[in-house]
Image (cartoon, rainbow, N blue to C red; front, side, top):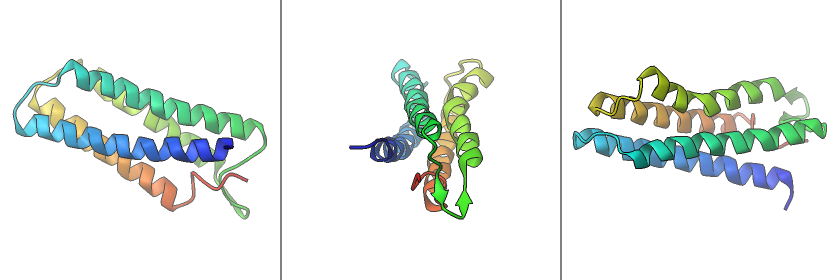
Length: 132
């Protein structure tokens, strides 16, 4: 299995993980529960997953590969999006100063769903693959 396949598998896992986090945060908000330590661990895991995908992308870029079709290379766009996906969930935690109330859960639900949507959009617009 090559790096391209591993990259695609991990990226798809990131999409599904973001969707699961959005549902989890929405359920916590609907039940008016505070955000648990398990969710904070999931936020960190999601950031690490996005970072792993980015590291594989860096390795492939150093090998001379670029995502997108032959006539439309999208390496810069790829790294802009991946930087967003790595830093935004921990960034929201920082902006909210660790709040764990209902409104924080709503914010995390919206952001996790937005991250999944952005990731799916990247896949649809061939920003992710094929690397050639």
